[in-house]
Each structure stands twice: as structure tokens, then as C-alpha cells.
Image (tube, rainbow, N blue to C red; front, side, top):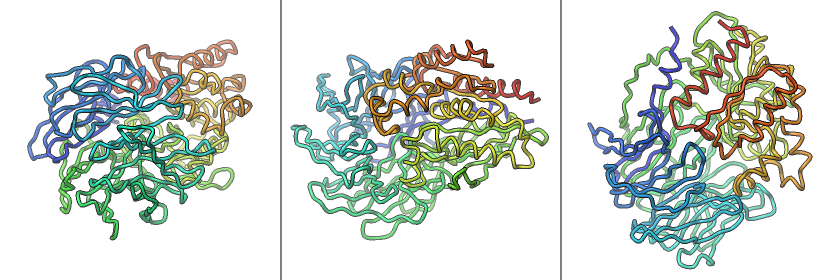
Length: 601
């Protein structure tokens, strides 16, 4: 018997971790209770985790105070992306809200004294950094501007705040590291190497004399060691095919206690590992298993490292390593009600796109049934993201339902160099779509695949890829499932907040007034008449990223043109849910739709 969707989603996922400065207390977010919530555990053998937050609204991220005795966390309502900030004790008994009005919050951090909190926020018209006095409850805007500011972090003396700023040149792709004087935010230092590059995810050395951050100015993400208030900098070398890895939520480098080295993640072909790199020495990989290691944290004293490890056939687990030891031990349970031996084993494949570009993908064979099998091309979100060799119950659920799965990291994906990542700039739904089509053609050549039953399935930008494929290349796919998709880039731009508009301008090479024809040409809503294949569309009523209004208009056109479709709205969800039931519904309704449409038993 195959593993059921309920069983696969019954395996807890881990979204976030934090570690106290002394390395003794671990904070993490997991959906073990049915929704993402925060747990506290000690990093010693036999410690049992304690759930410290509860409720129907998920909590994805939390931050331990410098003393390790309090927790800061973000929470929105029904996925609307408007966050309040809360403080609670490590036993979860003393909780208070510190914000008066909710707003989109990209990240937050404590100052070294534990008396202040800073958050980067976004509104419809502006972005900025807001600070909160923990003792008095007072708040103030430290800086407000049109360009987004995120990845905020205080220096160890609390006098400076470093962050990533969208901008710093004429090229829309620009990001730069910006450092603000906490007491005089007009006193600003910027670190930018060239127009069009991204300098991101800054981290302070313990003595405050240096910064470590990521830069792609040499063609791929590398860690840069930058003298604070100086011009000297050092790029830490990488091997062929490697990149310094940040991940979706941002993995900044961590300094060791001696100021002479940093810890950071290295990515190659959608697998990652954590390493220590001495500034005047070699890089050493920490002894964690093969797969994907992210997120990770290193204690302030440099003695303890914790990471979330996973692979496509190994669920999320938090591991601990005492630096210098070759021993790693799990801190979260690895006992599952599922026989992991039944999981589909992934295979890394490369294939050529229409223009000869090499595309890397993960292939999961069908988990049961007889050949020839139906198949799914899984389009990841982002688009500046990738499908990792990491735990993904969506892919395993589709495979266990009898479909082979190909998950391509098409142009625009991270992890394959800056040039590859930027190849879909001003070409969304162009070259990347051809990469996805080439993936379908690769599947069709496999002996175990029924080439008449190849579908496309994706969430967010992957939902967009589904709809642009069905409208622009209608002859390729027999069916599609689009979860929280983009349907109309022009209307989306009008609905987006200031940060998302900046992202749109980067992807299209400018705003609609300069690139309007491209926005229109790459919007599926303008090509609904081309659709031949049945499509399932799911949307979240409160989605702050892929707003429901243009999705509903797309569905109305499907109805008017009598195109086969099914439309489902999750009334109390946003973009991506932290609730297990909602995640299960996504994949269950998608798989059942494909089975019925493709007549799969």
C-alpha cells in the first residue's frame, strides 16, 4: 500500500529555529500540533520540547532575547500578512502584544541589551524600520522610504543597525548592505560593489570591526568580509558550481567567538551544507548528513551549532553539533508513523531546454501502480527560489498517488549563479516556460511514463507557470493545478504593497508605465481563450501576495468561454498556510482533480 497524504502531512515540518547566546536553549517553529507554533527545548540529552504558543493562527518565526528568557514572535490573522508583534516568556505563560496596529513585517530582531526591538515593515506606499522600547512600550520610526529594508541586525554594542536595502543604483536588480547609526539614522554607510549586483544578509563580527554578508558581484553568491567604516574587503572562495546559500527566509553568515571566521551554508545543485571558514585558513564542512541544511544557528560562544536537516526522502529534523566534534545528534524526534523505506527515492537529472541551456531537476518515480505512469511537472514558487533536496510532502504525496514527478529548477532559480538567476528578468513566462516545456518533453521520453497524461502543478509563481503554460503552450499539458497563482501582472502591481511592487519592477525591468506591453503579454488573463486542458485553481481569500481579485476575474473568463475548470477559495487562508489541514487539502484536491481529469485509477 502507498503512503497516504494524511500520513505524509502527519510528519511534523520545521519552519524556523533560534538559539540562545549560550547555546543552551533552542526555539523552533513546527506544525506538530496541526498548525505552526513555537516550541522551547534545551540542547541537552533527554530534553523534551514544550509548546509555548497556541491558537488557530500559525506562528512561523520567533526570536530569543539576548538573555534567553523571552521570546519575540510575529503573527497575522487568517494569512492576511499583517503582523502584530508579541512578547512571551519561555514557558509561554506571560504574553503581551507590543504593536498597536498590524502591518506587513519582513523580519525583526533584539538589540544586545534586550531593551529594544527593531522590525522592518512594509505598507502600501512605504517601507521602513520601526523600533520598540520593551520597557515603556513606546515605538518610533527610525527610517521610512520607498525602497524596502530587511534583514535588520544590531551591532553588538547596539550603536548600529545593518540591513539589506533594495536599491543602490540604476539597475532594478540592485540590493545593497546599508548600516544606520541607531541614534542618528541620517548617518548612513552603504556597501555596494557594482550596479546590478546584490549585497545582502549582513552579520556583525563580535568586536564590531567587520561585517560579513553575501554578494553576487563576481557572478555567484559569495561571503564577503568587509571592514566596517573602511574599504578593505575579502571574498571567501568557493569551488566550481558552489554558491553561498541564503534560502528563502535568509540565512546570514554567523561569526565565531574569536572574530577570525564565519559559518555559512554552501549550495551546489540544490543540496546544501554548513561550513566554518577561517579568514586566513581553509573551509571545513560540519558533519551533518547529505541533503539540505537550513536554517541553522551557531551560539555566541561558537561552541554549538544547530541545523534543520532534510532531504526529499528524509523529513525535517533538528540536529546539534558541538563545534570540533564529528558527532551530531538529533534534538527532535525521528520516530514517524510512516515507513520511510516506502518513500520515492529522488534522482538528480539534467536535460536541455529549447535553446540548449542545461536544466537541473529532481525526478521522483511513481510510488505505486503499473507503468506507463501519469506524470506531473512541479513548478516551484519564487521565481527566485528552487526545489531543494529537502522534505517536501507535496512531491511525495503526488508520487505516492501514482504520478511520477519532475521538479525542474528552471532559469530564474537561485543556486546556479547570478547569470542563471537573472535569465528570466524581463522574460517571465518566456525562457523559463520553455524550460518547463522541455521538462515535459523529457518526461515523455521516459519508458515508464504515459506521455498522454503529463500535467503541470505549482504554487505561487509555480501557479503562474501552470497558467502561462496552459495559455501560451496549450498543446503540451493534459491538465493543470494552479495554487494561489498570478493571473494579471498589471492588476497585481496596483494591488501590491511597496515591497512587492519593487520586486515586480525588478522582474519586469521597470514599472508598468515603462514596460506595460510586457506586463500584458506575460499575464495569463489575456490568453484564456487558448486554454484546452482542464485546470484547477485554488486561492486564499486573504492572500497579500497573489491577491484574489485578479484570480476571480480569470475564473470568470474561464466560465464565459466555457473552458473546463474548477475553482476553490480558502476563506481563512492567505498565500501559504501554516495549517496542516489546509496544506493537505491543497494536494488532495489537486491529485484527485488530476486523477479524475486524466482518468487515472
